[in-house]
Amino acid sequence: MSDTNDYVNEPPHYLKGGIESIDYIKQQLGDGFKYYLEGSMLKYNHRFKYKNDNPLEDLKKSQWYLDRLIKELSNEK
Picture: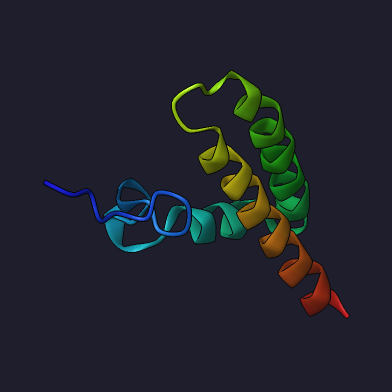
């Protein structure tokens, strides 16, 4: 049996309740959203070295938050 979920780009548990978690967080934080993204990058950059089973997943998550931060900052211009 194969797990076909993409836990980096579309974690299934983040899509519950009619709104994706990241969109809800952005709505609630407003201008502070970019700091949330930066903090998440720091978290995953720190955690990857302790993940013996799948360290690359945390690095990819960090990359996802970096890409989202770049997108947010690009939209501010």
